[in-house]
Length: 101
Figure 1 (cartoon, rainbow, N blue to C red):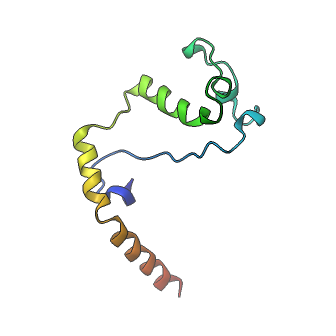
Figure 2 (cartoon, helix red, strand yellow):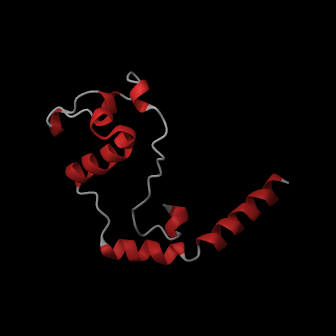
């Protein structure tokens, strides 16, 4: 989150998942998505929501367990950091290139 906000005073983030990875075909590797979840009445995420299994579980389980919802004020703080994101990433890249040279 340091890159997005730039100031470290808020906790938040984004999950990017295209849904194209075949998680249902890798049952042993992705057990939490392919086995019944007793906390959701035995629901199997890959069967219930298909390609959106990963993002669906990432949304519902932490929200239920910890109340992991971004507050309006933290959203505002992160939005303030996003306004300078392009400039900060450019400078970070320039510095990394200078060090590499």
